[in-house]
Amino acid sequence: MSVTVATILFIVPLLLLLLNHKRCSTKKTKLPPSPSKLPIIGNLHQLGSPLHRTLCALSQKYGPIMHLQLGCVSAIVISSPDLAEEIFKTHDLNFASRPSLAMVDKLVYDSQDIAFTPYGDYWRQARKICVLHLLSSKRVQSFGAIREEEVELMIEKVSRKSSLGPVNLTKLLNSLTLNTISRVALGTKHSLEEGVNDKLCKLIAEFSTLFETSRLDDYFPYLAWLYTINGMNKRLTKWFQDWDGLLDQVINDHVVHSVGSQSNTNADLVDVLLSLQKDQDSSLSLTMKNIKAIITDMFSAGTDTSFALLDWTMAELMRNQKAMKKVQDEIRCIMKDKTKIEESDIAKMAYLYAVIKETLRLHPPATMLLPRESMKEATIRGYRVPAKTTVMVNAWAIGRDPKLWEDPEEFRPERFLNSSIDFKGNDFQLIPFGSGRRICPGMQFAMAEVELALASLLYRFDWRLPEKMKAEELDMREAPGLTVRRMPNLLVIATPHQSRMC
Image (cartoon, rainbow, N blue to C red; front, side, top):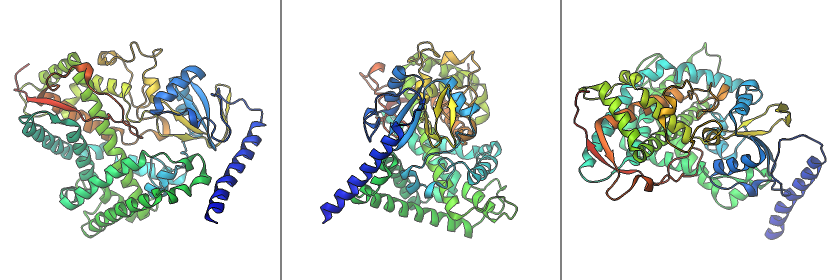
């Protein structure tokens, strides 16, 4: 009987898919160019890993706007800045929504966050809260002392470990970003509690692992039952219960020890959200589920993006010693005999900023920007894009397009020294944080941390690879995931630098 039931559960969805495929194929539509499709699965068999490289290769054959049928999901892939501008600027409102993703729904409170929630009244109000209260310029500046303290703690760890041999810089950078967002989001008390911090580290690591897992039911909703049979749903439920319990513990403690108004400069993000929840004048009634989803967003985006960018930047500088020397000379000339870098010093460091831009060009943390979804039918470059179409923008491909960049595979920060091109969403040849309504709201927060940490590491230490390792031998493989990190740990020799006048 169990075999018969399983057979029915498998065959019925396939029959429905075949009927749907036949119905769709009879329509005479002018969709964008597409690779040849197979019945039922469409183009899924052509998606290799890493996805951004596979799609870049396909776009070179089928064009900068390309249609893919991914099971039940109709998708287009954008691989040029002018087409990205059409999506993010010309038709921004129509493409401002997000597709439903099974993993996100299960991990992020039914997508009641900011990054993944569909476009609508809730997203508009949640985004407003984020921009005005959580990640405003004033709020980001108020966390400056936390950033400086955490960077200094990292520098002390490097100093202690440097005499013992190669330093695992990847591990230290990961700890820096997690500790910083922990203090910013949850407050100093909870970030320093050993039990809470250890549990938090494990849960965030598990979150990243789970998030990297692709699910067939995103493409074939009829197959959702498979994840009950293979144990994945049980694993997700266990993670969610542990994470939700931890947030309950933290939030309840904040309720008991409230700091008062969200305008308080000592308020962390949980304080701010709880204060807004009580605010009778607020246009949005925040539920506890909303608060937890937003905090989850802060951790997932606030750790991975900064960490990946720092790790890639240091790896590129280790491979390019001329750029390393140039940026260190700039920093040390500006700092003269000061003992440590403060955030106010960084605005003068033009080459440092160019180094970061060049890393974002070559290694955008989200190589494929978070997918968007069309809310109604649109026409892009003469091609019909139906409603409910998933839109994927390949920021990695745009950043390495030889039509846009001279010697695109080379790490050359100088290309940005006399250029007005920036990554803030207005220059579509460099969009590591997206653009338009759904641009990453945490961009300013991430950059403040990255600039200070990078400048401090380069100012306080001289860096080289372990003995007998050549620059070209440094492993630059990419790890799979929503945020693309370097796969291996970066092991380097750090020598404390003796300050001297410029």
